[in-house]
Amino acid sequence: MKIFENYTYTLINGRNNYFKDLNICFTKYYDAIYITDLENALKTGKECKEYIIKIEKNKYMPYSKKFILDLKNGKYDNSVSIRTHKSIKIFTPFVKIKPIKIPTKWKISNIWKAILSGQITKITKKYRTTDDFAYDNSVNFEKGKKIDNLEFAMELIEESSGWWCRVDEENKETIKLIVCCHTFDSNIAIFNK
Image 1 (cartoon, one colour):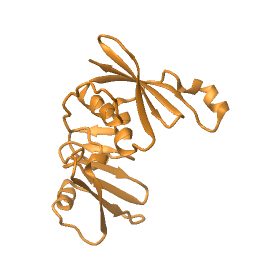
Image 2 (image 1 turned 90 degrees about the vertical axis):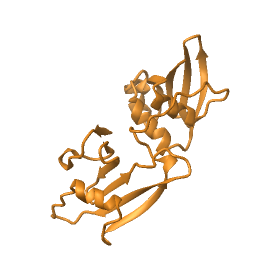
Image 3 (image 1 turned 30 degrees about the vertical axis):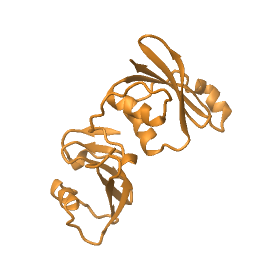
Image 4 (image 1 turned 180 degrees about the horizontal axis):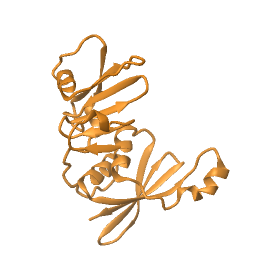
């Protein structure tokens, strides 16, 4: 994930390039470009449009600011495919989230909201297992690995299937949460009261 203030096509490399001035996520693959309009991202009951442009082999395509603004304003030809997504399932680093009240029962939506509001500031890997025990053992099951907060929030929002959480420990200042994907990916998140 890369976050930029201003759009410049030359900055784009791979997946999840966020541009604040255009409020978009730009992902470039070898055969297509995906531009997601983030205007409604993380809003309930809304949709986000994703524009898909196939890349022609050996053809340079300058995706200018004007091109993207035209897409967002409905000015495009039949070479552009559009699909919509539920806005609550589209991550954006540009939305301000209000701090949450401590819930009686924690849900995954509480976790990503607490991350985006700045209440969860530290996330580390408890363990991760794959089908390759020798590799897992060689990397100590990724125990203690620092997790990028925004990337973790993005995963919880956009790939929420299988995630669950529970309170592990609590004191006057913090709540230690265990956030897991099924049983193979376990993380520790510290919530600051």
